[in-house]
Image (cartoon, rainbow, N blue to C red; front, side, top):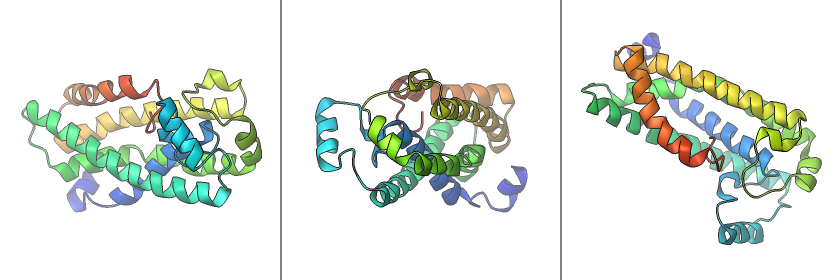
Length: 208
């Protein structure tokens, strides 16, 4: 982390952010039956009807893949930018004078392990395409214990474990970027993540 911050804090940021966003979109799409717009389903009956009417559960593989790639890339860049700004703003309230690009680098590089799940979800979606499309198209939240103990259930549990690891890694990397003790960095991360987690975990929206 110190090497990246010293040489080029922008190194790999956009690419990793896009891959992490695609991973989050793939995850939710697999859960919702390979839906091209996975984070937008399940929030209201009106929105569900509009999406189902406009795209439906039978979108082709090519359309689904292209839409998820575009949507996920934009989602990743947006969330990394927003998350970095929130972390930096909270840091400022603690009197920490850190640079935005350093905080962003710490955030995005912490989620490299999560982006590695992208090809796994992609492979699962390709192998189970017909089964997912025919049996798993759902609106609303689906937790690992709702899936029934199959491959998808284990994959979602593994997903949660990887994200917890990334969260710990974020605290360690952000402490370097902000030049602060780990305990203070953990408080900053907790303040930043707890409110959206409380709001989004029940929906499983935007990668939560």
